[in-house]
Image (cartoon, rainbow, N blue to C red; front, side, top):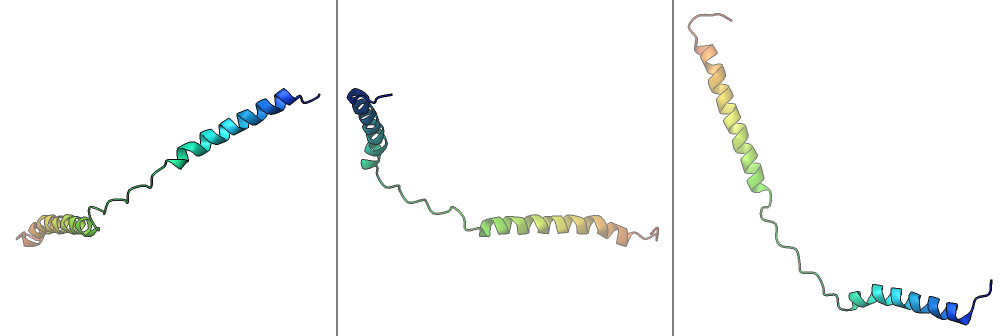
Length: 75
């Protein structure tokens, strides 16, 4: 199969068009803005977990304490 001059030129034009389609948008690209600072450094999350654990311990204490203070030794 003989490659004609027209087929060669058409192939080159198509390859050039694809290359320019890929490269041209990158020429005008701007750098990205820096990422915003984190809203929390993790201490507020740790504090929330600590409060939840303290409330759990307080509720558990109030649930277990009446068993200790019950005047009749059932257990």
